[in-house]
Image (tube, each protein chain N blue to C red):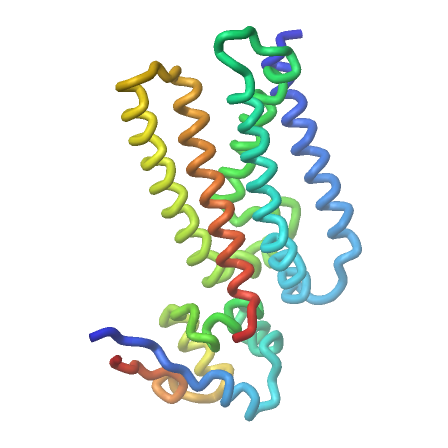
Length: 69
Length: 177
């Protein structure tokens, strides 16, 4: 059984009216990193996940969840 | 002047010229550090595959020079220049790169995703270099291979594949799904 990280980053970001670039600037990464996390290409570190949670005013659990396939 | 030394000087000259062009182009970069990092990061993603092609094409000079005939001076110069390019590319792979930019911009360019891509590319490069080493070892059982030739093959396989994969991963990271 494999596991995949699902995220609701894009929904929350658009809810706040932020662009990828604006969110990237808030957490101190490039837009590329935000894009790859949103697309599920890249699994962020705990530090980045916490920063994203803080920037989007949500807990890490609200933004990320593990899906078992 | 010794042709090898001339090649090293040509290589250093080419690197300095490249650095000067990069610095000149970056002079017009406006905006915040994040915007500069975005532009430079995209530029790097575009440049990596052509750089790998140039690097591997230079390698061809070495093998086009038959070990039976004496190498021409121009080939010796090219081979030495290739060594300098190898060192620069290896340094770019192993460090954050963009040495002529501020620390803030360099830290941003080398963010979490870039570090992961770079690590994966270096892992692939290492595996290909080792694979090339095994192939060379097998070939030596049937045909003599000089130490120089073996080193050229392993370095080309390692650095070339690492650059290609890094470029591929960086380009993929910018694609919107």
